[in-house]
Length: 214
Image (tube, rainbow, N blue to C red):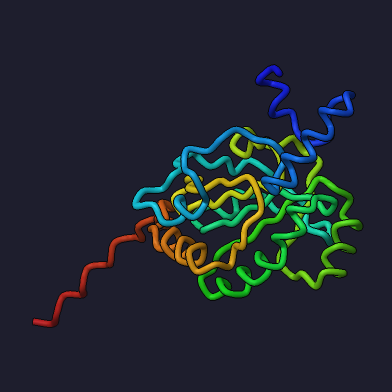
């Protein structure tokens, strides 16, 4: 099978055997087929001394909240971001949603921004979130996914540092409220932001002091 076909995604192909093979891979890996990662497991990536990923973040993406408000990712510059690409029909996505909800509550005081993005109809996403009791921020998009968020399946999770670097990307579901994941987010959140403070224009010089009476 050609390399390009191997990572084409779930549900593609007219041959029944190919469809069955993809389904088996999906159930076994809890994600759509994707290229191998450098580390053996996400646990290793979370605990490695150096970040396993160091890629430039692309903030040029606008998504919409479920009430129709626009969110330009540029407004998240200087913050730690947990970004998850998912769909309500995807079993691995469904499996990890409760743990993301718990992580959302566990890290609220840290100021971590959560952005969960689907390309589905907003009403469908809202119904799913309400039915599952999920309160983290959900967004939808009809725009093309920026190259920085290239994916080979879903769920796909990215963690972005305050310095605007993607320091983790993972294809597949995970228990995101695990102690290792929370510790990793704390570590990322402690990185100083590169966002420079606004400079103020210098004011006029102070007038000379009045001369005293002789």
